[in-house]
Amino acid sequence: MTDSTEPPSTSAAEPNPNPHLNPNSLIHPRREPFEHGLLPIPKLIFPDPTQTLIQLRQKLVSHPRVDYATLADTVQISVDHARLVLDTLASVLHSEADPLVKAEPGEIDSVGADLHDLILFLYIQSYKKLLPRTHKDSAAVADVWPSTSAFDGYLSALSPLQLVRSNSRRFMPSQADEEAHQLSYLQKHMANILSLLAEPVEGEGEESLVLTMEGFEHLGFLIQFGEKGSEGVSLSQAAPFFANSDPDMPAVPVPAAQVHDWISQNIASALEHITERISAKENGPSSVSDQDVTMADACTSSIKTSPSARGSSFIEGISKSSYVKQASDLKGSSVKVLNCHDSVIYILAPLRYATVYGCSDTTIVLGAVGKAARIEHCERVHVITAAKRVCIANCRECVFFLGVNQKPLMVGDNHKLQVAPYNTYYSELEEHMAKVGIETTINRWDDPLALGVIDPHDSLSHPAGVSDVQAESATRLDPDQFTNFLIPNWFGSGSPGSTKDNPFPLPEAYMSSQQRNQKNLWEIKQLLREAPLEENRKREISCALHLLFKDWLYASGNIRQLYCLQGD
Image (tube, rainbow, N blue to C red; front, side, top):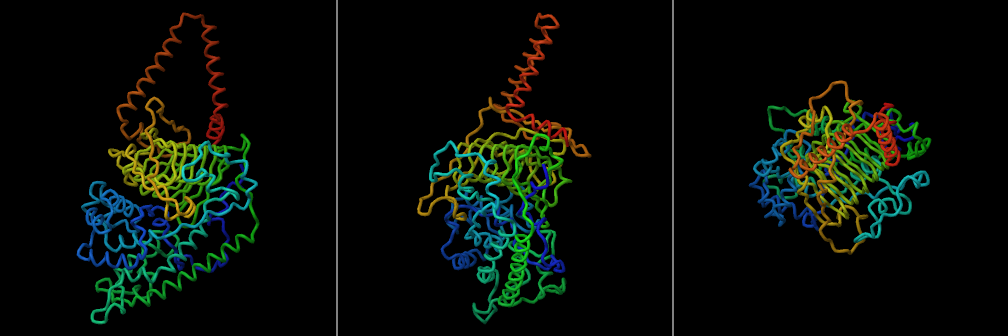
């Protein structure tokens, strides 16, 4: 496969129209709250979020940290939904030092959420996602994707993939387009957001609002400077009104209007830079993507991941191939697997976030995901992951082999999904899990939480005016259908780890099924060894078995993996 398989949308490949501009001087939206923090809970979509949240802040002013019961009572949601809100907030917070982030799974309620962070989290529930983009070379991908689904659909006549790709073959928006959309949202709503963080000046009424340095730092939940995410420039150090504050003295509060002007100017500059970058890319040479490959070309060494300067790696448009990435191969701590078909993808690394979008007929192994994994608009994929939390949206005929610490979240128009316990390992798995904080003693794989079918953040989910119903949940995979997934060890990293087996204990039914299969295999081998046959007959049987196995490799497409992985 040639370099043309690299994602056309990645920011790493985009020309910089102004090479003299310091990237650390640009403001960026934090992607995590918008990509992993939106919940389709209707009661969290307020008609007037500013007024509602000002009243909520007044009610909870004596609760600097908010627990499940307090949140449920104040917002009038169930305790289960309140738990989901705090769990989700913990997964997208900007500060690793926040007690909610550091809390063990059973401690989140007692620790509670910071009131300011919670208010910002609830405010952005009004955000509407950007519509999927049209692929610029629809004809090139038309033969890659499967045709119509076998399902008739429930609220929509289109399957999730068809809905995304209908007519002009739509794909996930480019990173630049999404960033511009998020910045525009923040630009429009920043005055309201600041009013939720600001305090009135004593004796001067509500019209004179000021922002303390502590309140200003909470904006780090939504915006950041620099290209390294949480490792970038501190928000207060980037701002001229707090940058030189004496650490031993409380900083002087700043008028909220002054903060608003400064942020608005920075957002306008960032949007102008994005527009120039997109224009420079569109006017540059075009690249063909999503091409099919021959067997000789379908090997891991010839496919390249495309890192983003802001900490994400993209794997896009892989078709009929196998693909392996170790921790040392990835730039940043987030991965997006986009629009891959009929492939096997191994990402054997510790990650913060992972997104799988628009894939079909593919097996995807996500090493250890410490914050959140999201699988969306996929058909007939097998996803194997150890993760803190997993969200599954608008998928069909998929199987998820999970080692997950929180309830898997099911949203959107899902059909015929199955869940099963985690079923693989690689040598550094436990080291990676420990690094990102995944507990092997907690596995909620069979306890999914289903929310509504209609996603209020996504205008493509379903036609307007259709009343919502609970999303279809997942069924347990039949233990007799459960098998271990073997990750080949010949592409192990240079530093062998200590993991020798699946770190998640198997439930009794699945363990018993495995033991029966192993016993049956041993008995068959024993029968063949002890069969009263001449040696030449035994050799004939052995040759026949090898031929049948080879036929199966070709018929199933697994022969491609041997060519790909052995050639790496």
